[in-house]
Length: 85
Image (cartoon, rainbow, N blue to C red; front, top):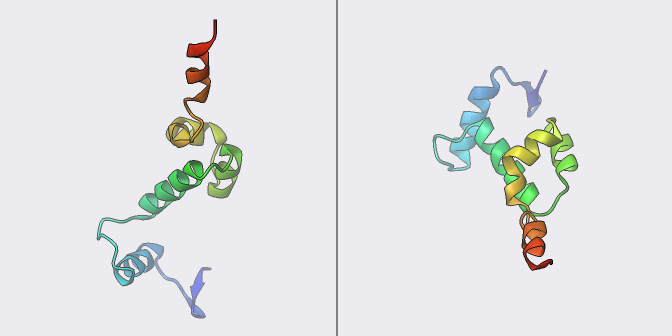
């Protein structure tokens, strides 16, 4: 059972909706929105995809497929290959 301030949380969806309102976020923010933002930020900050996957409880392949392009070194290998003979 999930609790907040010692009281059981009856509905995570309702609780998230209240948290979004209190944080003055856009009304359309969902758990998925927050998860997507988290993954994007972690990859952008250079955290290894395996660690991002572990943190979010998903596969490394999913992180690579959906967020890999956000890594700062994403195009490095291609750029280096252009200069090779």
